[in-house]
Image (tube, rainbow, N blue to C red; front, side, top):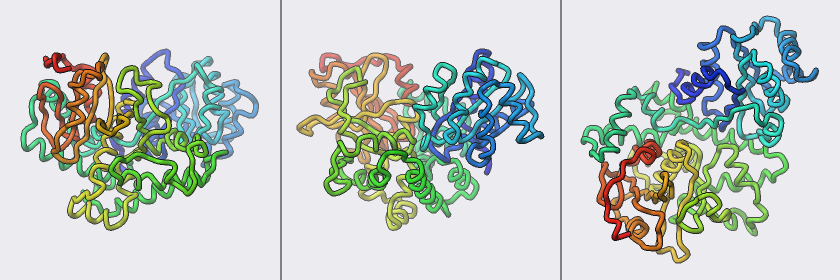
Length: 454
């Protein structure tokens, strides 16, 4: 598989160049490219690179049996494989599948205090008992959560250059519409991303063959692999309940309000019986939870109903893979999104927001007269984000910006099949520019608008 350019590569270089860097733990869902990225980094940036996979190489789980003295650990590693070269200050040790050997995390404190070897750990969030890892290495590690390819990385895979991405951002800042040719090309790429998703093996195949042949089968296999892992790693939680929730996601996304309701997952199901189930799927990186705000105001933390939420797939391609065969054919050949049109656009926007570091919230008042797909924030404002699958009026968005009861909201954003614009109340952006939204909000220059209406 051709190595794809990933954002984690820049982080790894910055990490290595920091003289005070801590051992690094890269977390993320399965099959998102963690191992390949770390392996390439280790082989190209270090004189010696040692990779230990605690699932495939079970014999290495014993290297900590004599304690956590670094010299003893190195001796034990080289006793098992004498061919490994491990020299101080020029070796990266990569502990992969760390969830299969919790002692590997406990060793991080010793490696940091010793200071002679760089250590990176990685593992699937599905199955990691991260509380145990945290207690064993608190204060002596740096965490990084990795995701499948975001849309910018997908554009890189298609050959787009950084200066082209920069032009898109500059047009957002300047509120300068894209040209017709830019819109057409990027909308084509975005539709491909919606269908293919960001799983590296799938993206590589799509780029190599430039068609969708075999893509659906790969997506469906990943979904089945996740089901198998649920039965393997769910621990003390009820595996059947986790599977019930996991398999129900596309059903609820196909409904008009997209709200996930435990009571409809199984006969007699109650929220209290499913405590921890949705969080487990979220921690595993399989789903993105979007909570309903109690009140549309700052601060966001703690201002939501934990039992009122929507569930989205953690990769847009996995939602596509979960659809029935007829929907697949319709989508690929006719680009007819049918009843899933709103769900597909909301799912991919939720994924783009999550990959930028936004926590996911929506808002719906008690009378359902005001509904907003997502709520994000800049430094001092709450920002409603409306996702439109059609060109309908932005009724709720206008209400939230101009209503006197929404004091923390000063402007809004509407994403859809639209060009860049600003009407004095909200910005419009095409779907595909959502990946630049956090950067836009962080550096947004104040745009004059009529505060008298607020």
